[in-house]
Amino acid sequence: MDSRVSEDKAVTPRGRRPKGHGPDLREAILDAAEALFSRHGFYGVTVRQVAAEAGVDTALIHYYFGAKRELFDSVFARRAGILNEARLQAMAAYEQAHHGAMTVEGVIEAFIGPLLDLSMTNDEGWKNYFRLVALVNNTPAWGGETMHRFFDPVVHRLVDVLKVIRPDAEIRDLYWCYQFLTGSMMLALSETGRIDQLSDGLCRSTDLDAVRARIYAYCAAGIERVIERKPQP
Amino acid sequence: MDSRVSEDKAVTPRGRRPKGHGPDLREAILDAAEALFSRHGFYGVTVRQVAAEAGVDTALIHYYFGAKRELFDSVFARRAGILNEARLQAMAAYEQAHHGAMTVEGVIEAFIGPLLDLSMTNDEGWKNYFRLVALVNNTPAWGGETMHRFFDPVVHRLVDVLKVIRPDAEIRDLYWCYQFLTGSMMLALSETGRIDQLSDGLCRSTDLDAVRARIYAYCAAGIERVIERKPQP
DNA sequence: GTCTATAACTGGATAGAC
DNA sequence: GTCTATCCAGTTATAGAC
Image (cartoon, rainbow over all chains, first blue to last red; front, side, top):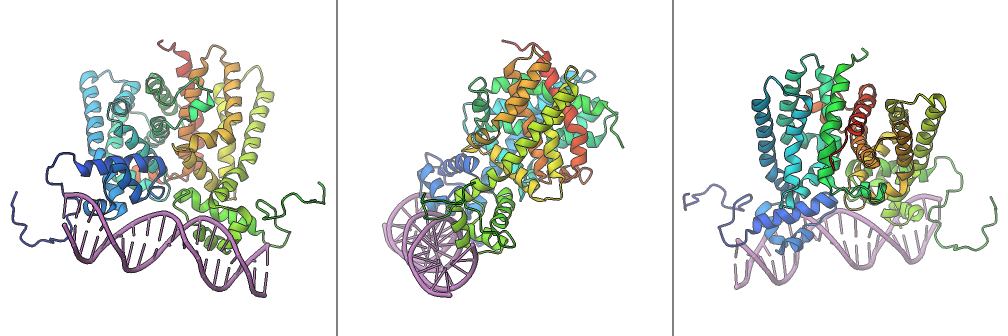
């Protein structure tokens, strides 16, 4: 790293890493923002609240990230890469291990499994992140475009693999099935507490083992039935 | 209905009907609020914006509905009754017409169909309303509780009927399947435009006929497979 | 890098005229 | 019922001290 910054815009170091002191404040801010945005949405959170939660001053947030919207984008982008990598790897591993004998359910497991794994990590941040993605996913205003920017490649990968297993499947069916699947998956990962009240405590939305035990079969069966019936023209 | 209101709190007529002049401003305000809240969420909309959209003054909104939150609740409650009524009726009709020969897919159609029907009405308001419900449905902070207050009875009805058709089914499986189903359904009804970009125009999220042609089969197959496999203890 | 202070503005809500 | 005018709490964002 060159110590002389010469003269390329020496104004504000937006997006710059902090020097390297003990507790990384930049990450702390992102964690706090992630937790709050995921529960109340972009407009439901103030920069002040994020600052309070992170134990820093509001000015510092603007110093690191610029405007509030840029902070939000940074939160969204932070884990997207890791997530995509994990999913692509899981799908590649499944293909390698089972090529010639791949099943729809197997592919679905490779596609959804990593999300459940990450959500069950000690890192509570992943739960918040998935809540955030779910929230963005059904934000009509700008959600579609955002999802598109970050997550399309993995989905195309899924569709491609399904097409390999079921060559007769109509592509449009696969896209619609993906949409059904992602709706179920995102709601489950949001852990909204709805099922707890609905079932009067019989099911708990935090019980991701229960989700895992059912969602692969549920989605796979749905996909199979849709692609196996000739759709009416 | 008694015409004499005697003396019960003659302060502000919150929640009162307007006298009976030409264009019903109260409804216009609700329509505007519905459209805006459904796209930007509660915090993403200002009372001023609602007023502008409805062509009225902000003061009038407070006159009719009180605080902003009460306006939101009024929007949410307005169509809930009609919707629940339509769904209960569709399910009852299905039961009557097919008792003895009910299928999972038939029940699911009775459960989901009315939403698609209403969304395809000329009344654009229903589309906004479903977007709003979807948004509330995965709002971790207070969404679960709100859904619970308004929509639990229809869901219990669905679960009961499914239990009749498949007496061996575990109740917990049915609740989880309902959650998967509602995630798919709400996302589809939100028409976020995501699938349009994802599929590069091959599918359009506004194409509810395409949704209808697939979602019944998808959900029914999912439910059947989940309840037919013995879950591991 | 981090904090203090504050500028500049937007929001919800109401009082009171008509 | 409806609008005008306004209050004031709370917000983003920045300038500048340390």
